[in-house]
Image 1 (cartoon, rainbow, N blue to C red):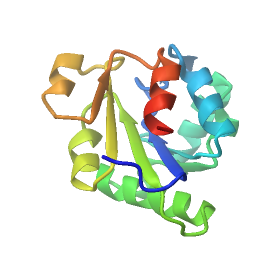
Image 2: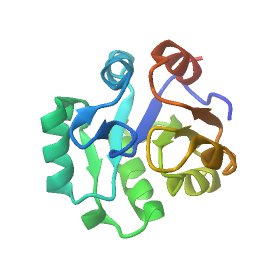
Image 3: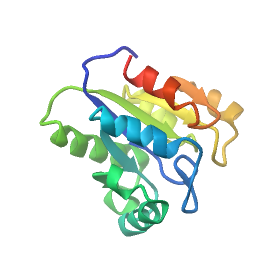
Length: 157
């Protein structure tokens, strides 16, 4: 996927991608800080309910990075939740066109994000093995979020 504009929407799954329980996974704080500094519109798309997701983010110390949170109580399927998060992020960007990225560890969102034209990052820190995630043909497959410089380089190329 090529860059459309300098504006970026970056969406994340929660458990297994950013945290394990309420413990931050490798590189998460650095990646979120780098995205925040570059004014990316950051959102969370999760299978948790909204209040549970907020509690996990607060416990992990990263709630402030997520002005947009879409939980299972806002859409049953991943496609509906991704669409709602995108709408909310686009509103934050005042409707401007933006490049869109989605980080997921389970593989549930990878096929959906590809179908929607969203650049997908499969992250091998969750329950689905990285080899299986690669079979879903994400745009990028990473063992974790530890190589922040590489990831930010892809997003802000």
